[in-house]
Structures are given as C-alpha cells and as structure tokens.
Image (cartoon, rainbow over all chains, first blue to last red; front, top):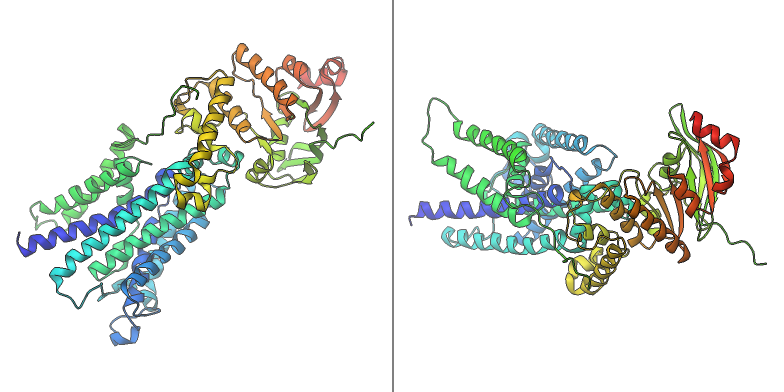
Length: 319
Length: 256
C-alpha cells in the first residue's frame, strides 16, 4: 500500500465513523422518535465550530486572518466534549421550535427553515465564526507527532467513539424507552393518553441526537482542520436522511449498513469516475441526483428500507 | 348512614367554543365512584368534545373539572393519565409499528426502563419489572380473547381488535376513571357482549367509567346513570329506562 492509498483509507474510515455517529443520531430523532429534524446538520456544525473555537486559541493570534468568538486552547478530549455539548444545545433549541402543535410535515418545514437561517447568519456575520470563509488551521490531537502515527491513532479514536456511541444509542432505541419513543412516533396523542410526556421526550431525544451530531462534527473537524458554511448546507441533512431511509428507518443496524452503502460506497465510488472537463462539478451533482433518486425509489418501493424495523416477539403462549 | 362518597369526576359549567360554535355549552354532571355513567345524545351533541376537554386533549373555554377531589381543569393529557384519568379515542389509535402486546406494555405505569437510571442501567435494572408487565399484558389479552395475537403488528389488526387493544392499553394503566368514546363501535356482537361483562367486572373491582355510546341497549344494561346531551347542553339525566319515556330526550334523538 502506498502512502497515498493508506491516507485515502484513513480518510474513508474517519468519514465513515463520523457519518455513522451522525446517521445514528438522526435515526434516533427521525426513525425512532418520529421527529423529522431537517436541521440536523446544524447540530453537527455546532459541534464542529465549538471544537474549533475551543482549540484555535485567541482570534488575535491569527493577525486578522480569521475572526471568531471565544478562542481557547483546550486539550483535545475536553474540546470534543464541548463539541458534543454544543450539539446538545443546538439540538434542544431546534427541538423547542417543534413543540408547537403542528402537523409533522409543517414541523419539518420549520426545521428546514432553521437550517437555512443558521447558515445565512453564520455566513453573514464575519466576527462570529469568520463568515463565509470559515475557520481553518483547526488543530487535531497529536499535531506535534509523526503524521503516520497520528492518522491511525485518530482512526482508533473515531472507532472508539463509534463503539461507545453505538452502546449508548442502543440504550435509547431498545427496551422500554425505545418502545415509548416509537409509540410517540406512531401516534403522539395516543402516547400522551397513556401518560407519556411528549414535550419532555422530544427534548430528550433532541438532546441525545444533538450530542451525536456534535460529537460527529467535532471529530470530523479535528481531522480535516477546516470548517465553513459550505460544509453544512441543508442538503447535507438529506444525505444522512437517505442513508437512514435506505438502511431501514428505526433500525440501528440497518442505518449502519445504509451509511456505509451511501456515504462510503456510493459517494466515494463516484469519485473514481473519469473527470469530465466540459462539465465541472459533475460528479458532485451526480451524487445528489443519485441520493434523491434512491430516496424516492425506496419511499415508493421499499419504505421500510433494506433492514426493516423488527419488534421483539413474546410468543403466543401465556406464562 | 355514612356520608355520600365524593364523586370521582365533577364537571361544572364546562364550555368549549370553536369560534362562534358552542360545541360544549355549560355542561355540569358527575360520575359516581365505582359506577358506570353513560353519556348519550344525537350526533353533534358535543359528547366527544366534552370528553376531549375532560381528558385534557382540548383546553376548556370555561368551567371546571374536578377529578378525585382535585381541580384538574386544563391539565395536559399525560398528567391526567398518570393521575388515573385515562381516555380512549373515538377512532381507535393503536401504535401501528408496535406489536399488540407492546401496545399494552407501553402503557404500563411507572416503568423503570423509562427513567434515567433505567436507560443507564439497562435490563439489569428494569428486566424483572418488565417481566411482570409482560405477564400482566398477556393475561389481559387472554381475557379479551386475543390470545395468539400478541406478536401481530398494530397496523395489521382488524378494526375490532384495534379497539380492544386500545381498551386493554387503557386498563394496563390501572386507571381510577376510564373515559371510553364509543368502545363498542365496530365490535362483533359477541366481543361487545364480552366487553360489557368486562366493564361490569371492572366496576365491581372499584373502577369508575364514563361511557359515550350510541348503542342504547348497552347503556341501559350497564349504566346506573345516564347523562343526555343535545346541542352542547345537558338536557336530561337519570336512568335509561326512565329517560326513554321523556319527551325532550325522544325529541333530541328524532330531531337531532
């Protein structure tokens, strides 16, 4: 394996890991709890920006090259934790807008608008998070180490976060709480009629889902070192949503496979198409067309996804 | 003679207006402890709206609702349900992507698995309680003649089965007062007869019921007291056999 191939593999793995964390969080919100959070990417951005301002040091260090609020030099684990917390805050704030008794499709529209507004505000305000140019030179862990060592160590960190994340995720999607969330998804009013506090449950889900998004964003930005509004356009949520719908709405393992298929095989596979000079950015456009087509095809032909949600069986026999 | 027990439900001057429409227009009645009270009236009388307001689904425009001696006016549905005032819906609302048995399990009160400690601790913390709930839910399903349907998804159940599941789900909560919105609608005669028996048995065990129903024979058989509504108001109150002879009740049903 050449160094280039090795580096490519590392990139693929880190992207897969951070995509998995994000897709799991979105599946908890949309697939399990029924909250069509079309602003989910905002939680990822919140995690990325929080990590960035927690590690970049004071803005004045960059002699006008980039401006931002805050500016600390916290150690990597603390900054990642802060990123996850940033995701929680963003998730809960988004969740609050969905509490009004609106039809779910209207709630989805409200959240889509929030996503657009967030990008617009961050792009427009240069002093907040360096506007449209975004933040660069964001340090990762072991930046003083040999990059060869760093890369694989970082894959290890992301893998660890995924294993721990999946364990936590399962605690929320299985058992009595997972059942209650799915009941809320199927019929909010009937769930309230059997004593479920919908407001509390929705905010809890938004907090946990936001933590996954924030963690994903922090781990991603620590690896790639830069982050700007172009990285978190509203369509990015739709890419994750495609992974959820294709894999299997409400099924954690299905979404894991869906993320691998969509984010790694499909979108990365497209990069191996020959370059067409006459049409710049064709590959990327093709990617979006494919995602949209897949979403429509699955909703029409196999709405349950590759791996449908399965509920535990208790057997017909009385004990 | 001991003092008359306080009613489980006291509704006073309850009103619900939708713009200029007075769907419920100053309604007062009580439901006695351990009794079955019927709420009848022609279509559009405001029965379901009254039930929706009492059950916390809609906020009232005015008036008060006292449950078990406590003013619960305008309290949200989930809080009322936890306090023991549980309602069912006119159109059965089952959780379609949960199994029949899970529909019942969701409603089990004070589940350890729903608490922060339960989420963190996992099955070790809630497993044994869950086992009891499963046994209880299976028992209920047996009583409703739905043995063998435990693992069927809610969406695949027939209309009558959905209705039965909804009633069982409400019972799973160990309510003090059940508000039932046309529980017999769409049930086979044999199942609705079973349900009648079940209601009488539950009443004898101390449960109070408020029953909105169109089937007047059922009402006559199970209800000790019947409240008649028409055009948003209570027009009569008493025993069914006697109400049948009243002129204003007959008029309300004939004229609507």
